[in-house]
Image (cartoon, rainbow, N blue to C red; front, side, top):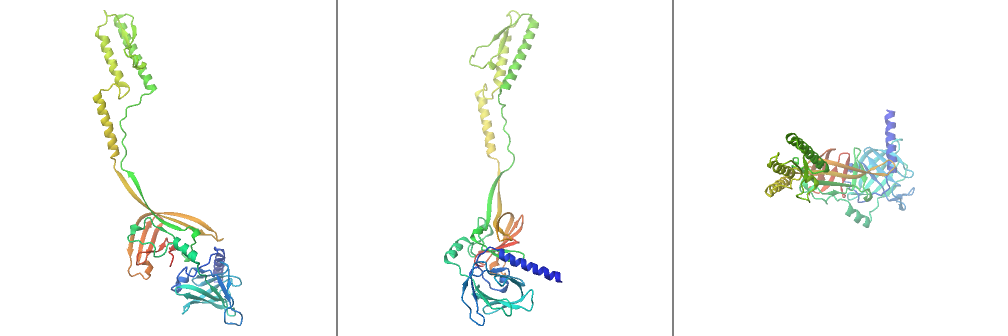
Length: 419
């Protein structure tokens, strides 16, 4: 039992140290509304003014301006964490009473149960205006006032942060393209509120993109092989082989030495187009041998290298039409448009030393839908948009006017300004 008690004390002390490490910023009068006692849990008040009643006097003393973070009051379920000169400590909350001025927390010192005190929370409409703290039976009451936000800062924050009645979503698909700049973070499961500052750059973006996918594979056109130096060498080698074979046959039949004659009808034709002829005596070789060989070789040359050279005009036109048809069929390939949905989150992690570490996350949305609950007890949660993502469900809540009020990612809940 003692071990459990000691563990509780250690956890409470660590929480107090965490209050000391957090970034020093005031909590202003109009930051958050507190309509019921449960709204206090997880919230830390950082006052800007302090009054201490003089001993033996009932009236408060002179107001003293205090620096941001020099005094803090963090309220959790069952405990009050206090940071400040001479009052550092952890107090058990025996009960919370609703009063005409707001709330009163009945306290008991965690180390000395005989020492009892209170924290009175005064409200101005739904906002907390002042805190009155008494640590023990014989301690003097200390009054702390929350500062009012300056006109310039209020205007700047109103332009920057998303208000609870700002973004209207009539249908679920209207959410895409929206950007949310939350005013508060609630870190779960302990439900700890963290006031977001402009310099924290916290933003949630809903992104819709379209991607075009071609259906089927592109067929390759029938191409004519390109002419290379190697092609020409192979052709000349084949011609030389054919010449030698032809010459050998004529020598065997006629036994007469042949004479090489080089065709020079077209001096502009490249050398690999020129055909070598073998002429034998007229009395032993028929007259039409030379002419038949010449015609056959001319046909071979015209068909062997370029698809467009030596081809009759009609056939060449047919070839061009065929190529054009293949190009048109390629352009008519079917395409599919795929729509992708993502939620991008720019946030920060609060380290133990009070520093902020940037954090970026991207959630892929598989499906989403909107539902309505007319019987919802919370007027800020009448509508809900549920997103099925690769990291689990995400929920957006809207009020009865379909204005965004809250974004729930499970481990972190984001609240709009004015809640």
